[in-house]
Image (tube, rainbow, N blue to C red):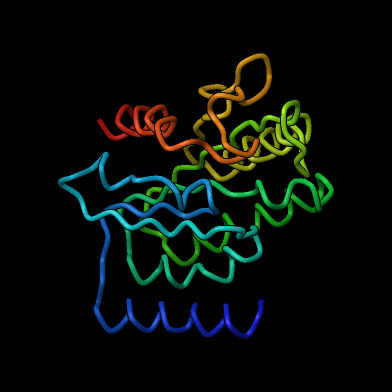
Length: 193
């Protein structure tokens, strides 16, 4: 972690601690989470989006204190897209399990709900990961959720068409265009409803 990121993380954590900020629902992830307007789905709840562009599973482990400060009742997790291309399946599973353990240990009263990773468009765009890797990692996430008794939500297949993210749903092969978040919001409404 760079010194600048570390200082920002300390500042955010201190601010939340001093404000005694609490959230009913927290979203924890990378840029796919960051761009979501999840508070619009739950207008009667205090919602905090802790998505961080470019974050990795290891980076999220370092940010768990932020989530802990919020003491959410529900915690929605999506992680791993930035790790798929740079780690073996074994490494991915080990890091993801570490993240789950740290979240459970630090926020034991939160209901942890785990989304698998979204598909990508690795046909029309040149990107660093592919759907075969993502599907294998999603299987690892599913097995970890079973092992830890966590709710696992398959969002991959909500978006996948012919095994990939359709070109019209993305601007770069990985990130959703804003109007496509409505599918994710619909899944969330069914989960909470």
